[in-house]
Image (cartoon, rainbow, N blue to C red; front, side, top):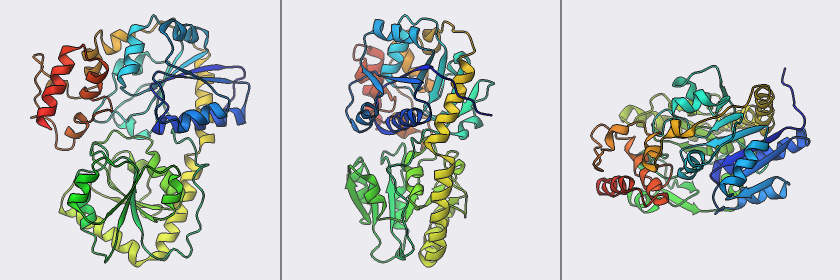
Length: 429
């Protein structure tokens, strides 16, 4: 039986309030006020918000948001809070704060926003030291285990994504929604799209324009929306989501997939750990039963597309199943209730001192390495050796953000080892 606790102060520490984390926190805090306004949620944002969409929603909802606090201010907030919830992924600024502050005894809940299956990984000691460590997808339990581990999805809800009546939607309309970085989108995505033999078919790419030039060179089937303020308006224009991702991607809750499905869009996904925890093959979407790229995978994708093209009634039924299943199992109400129950249990445990330097290290280069699954490629002399890195795993290393060496070097330009690794990584891109 889930229980609620009254008059509990939960301090959330996040690097920023953009993207998936911003949506998750704004949905959580909104639902918390609906469910039990006597509990207080405070958001600490470590850097100035760039995209203020969810930051503004937090403020409009009456949630206290503190931006770029001084160390002593944050230390005092942590001391006066019942629960300190770290919104974790390997962002340079988060590790800097945790390792450089004089942190008092706390009750630590860590909500992890990467899956940790490939790169970046999650330091085992962070899991052990947390009073409760929470993944955002059950796929992470394939690698990590522990008595203090839970799972709470971080969708943030679907209030901005209306249910769509697609009874007259007979024409196949394919799209992709989400990041077009090849650490997320499959590097051979264009090959999948080019394999579709349907006259005049265009595939709508909804979202960022990263890799637009490459994708346009590889295929003439793409239409790019660029940034849109109301994503749901673009999602209304598609009914099949060709959500073909890098087999070694870092994603976990997969908000883009959930949001599309909530609007009755039928997904086609690879057999990746995260996606198969969301899509039920043949019921609310299709899973191609191989996660890597070969002729069998490509042929399976073609068969799924052709089936949905030739059977619009089945496609509509699967779309209804997609919307109903996602709205039922991934709601903000469920996430907030489970998180509240976790805090209910943690509140009964004593506070303790946590030495974050023992988890992440003493220097920026050590902080960076602490979350790398292939530390051996970063040599002590500043060189890089990618010979042991898989063809899919290399793309996350080339990212400008996402906790990459370029990301860390940008924040810690004085760290000569990070700069050398970053410079040498660029030579290999």
